[in-house]
Length: 159
Image (cartoon, rainbow, N blue to C red; front, side, top):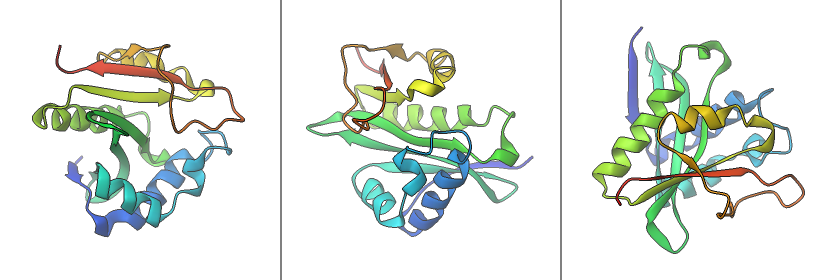
């Protein structure tokens, strides 16, 4: 299996939007904004933050993005991580998460944050294995106000 992770560029905006929608189909609640992702939204994320695309045998298999927290460029939010259904069960999301972790460390970022949707709490254990801790004192600024609030987790990279 030829696994490659590459940094996303603005030219990848349409691909990233398609990957997000396809990876989230039938796994994330239909009310999630990820199901309505557009290339315009992705391009904005890439201009302010960044992303990685996971390729398996040169085929796009998953992606992840990050954005600096409003008002604090030393805190990044991890967004829209997903792996396509045909590639699940191979622990590929760990490669996406590790890529963001290493990139954040090389950029001297202080902290990473992510939100876990209320219906996907099984993911809390995955993120905990990578040093993320529950942060109930934090609010997720992008949360849908008509849904249960997500669980916010953080990983401090510098103490």
